[in-house]
Amino acid sequence: MSYCEIGKRTEKEGTVLYTDEQAERFAVERGAKPRPKEIKNEIDERGAFVRQPNHFTAAFGEEEGQLKAESGRYHLLWAKGCHWSNRASIVRELLGLEDAISVNIVDSTGESNIYGWGFPDDENFEDPVLGIKFLSEAYYNADSGYEGRCTVPALVDVTTKKVVNNDYHRLTNYLEVAFKPFQSKDAPDIYPSELRKEIDEFNDWLFPNINNAHYRMAFCQSLTAYQEAYEDFFRAMDELEERLSRNRFLFGDYVTDSDIRFFVTLARWDTHYYRNLGPQQKRVVDYENIWAYARDLYEIPAFRNNTYFRDFSKGRGNKENLFADFNTRFVDQIPYEEYWSQPQSRKELSATPNEKFYR
Ligand SMILES: N[C@@H](CCC(=O)N[C@@H](CS)C(=O)NCC(=O)O)C(=O)O
Image (cartoon, rainbow, N blue to C red; front, side, top):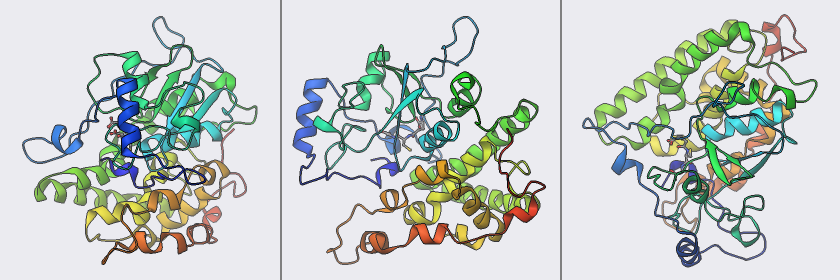
């Protein structure tokens, strides 16, 4: 079971439950296959987690053979717990692409999620735009021989119901560049052309050291691999703490694509990831600059609106169990909103204290 399913809600409004039996029945109807397991298929000989490569990586652009950005043609599927896909949901809203790209949130199917992501919160457990009951249907529509995990983010063509892109490395960049004609008039430029090379290099460093570090620690099967990931993460956090002592955002006075990638991991560290990882050197709130920076970003509506702390912090256990974990017992009482809204004075670092964006 993926670690991104911690925020699962099997209970729909009212008392309708999505049971394993229903999921099984739907799976037979729709030809869904049990989801492959990371800890079986994505572990190398050293016990380290090696993430499956993205399968649908066609680029958006104007060149021959590239995907064409269009308004109303694509549907973004993402999951509240999943930071890879949370990036795209934040960028979609930040750039005002809501009318151009429709969206839905996936969640676990049945109590055990044997068949992977589906639509437990939608009528008939079906995505209203695509009419699918499992995310995997859109993957198999695009490639009937696909054998990997069916993951979010997934951008699906609503005319063919096929996944066209699940490349979390580049998806936000396509929304920033290729979808520019459909952005709102006052959309910020979070991927300015003069910084693109630097942002790309930074993002490539951020991926193993910060974004994937949690999964490297959570899925690995040897202590050596765990320690490598642990050390990489805390070394990177120290570097970023220092960088953010001088800069309001990672690239100076304005929010860029990299800030979104860092934020989505930070939002989940103390709330959700720490529970899988064992004792940690420091919490995010122990880094003075990083913690204030995260709150500065959280003030921006697109960040706030797409961050569901309570859903992704929830445990899978039962409160009544002896030694139920902390979040299972207290998640409903933790004032996440209050913690994350505490004032900070990051604007003092900026030449444009009242403007967080380059337009
Ligand atoms: N596309 C990447 C990263 C995205 C990813 O892992 N998404 C997770 C959620 S954080 C997912 O959708 N998992 C569903 C599954 O494995 O069935 C991958 O294939 O590993």
